[in-house]
Image (cartoon, rainbow, N blue to C red):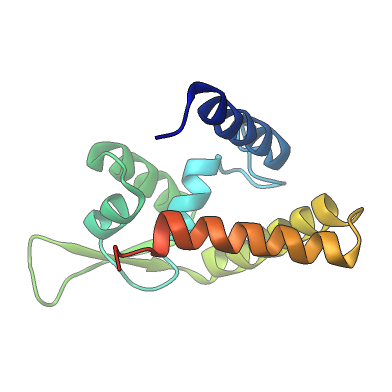
Length: 144
């Protein structure tokens, strides 16, 4: 079990990284979307359902529904009737939504390049290895 100082260091990193990436900003890059709205848009890369989006992102269904209404109104997503369940809707990106997602992805890549740009190649590779290890331990480890 980690001690309080170790937990404090992890929490400090989380706060600093959140600030560095601008996750607390009202808008993502130069879009009209908040970070949660952009994450929901990203979760709709392929046709899915509102419930799948809410479950994937661990969001409240009513909040997800409100965001989906906004994304529909902005013409970033479209809803279609499900052919397998009359009570359900499928959602997918519109062409406008796909273009916005490409811009967000490019801006995100540039943001990370800028963040690590002052590091030499060895430091960048060490940072990548650290992130890869964190990802594997927290999110890919299935208990084996």
